[in-house]
Length: 143
Image (cartoon, rainbow, N blue to C red; front, side, top):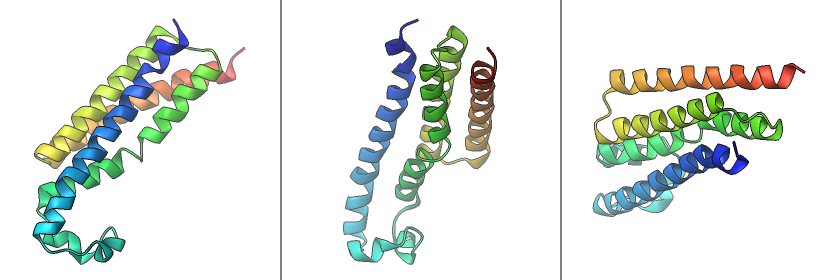
């Protein structure tokens, strides 16, 4: 397997994160303008200004933040496996499953935000991440 194909899920999740980033600005800026929220009042991410915006607008921003939490472990694992030259079909499959679940998590949060559904997807993606970490641990600690 080529290094290029192995790193495609990493680039895929980065691209998805940028889509959500654009989605956030496309919804938040007009909502702030409509609610007459001055940008300076948004200096605190949990300030009272958020209450002036529709919930669905805040959901996009919350999801953008979520894409900078757990996925950082995914990025580190994938780069570790690449550096160890331990790209395998198993790791690649797990990586693509993880990316798909993170996209589903985003869509679940942004489009409806049913916590039970979102949590289920999040938990499943976490289990995939654990499997990927176990794969990396084997690669890193065995000869």
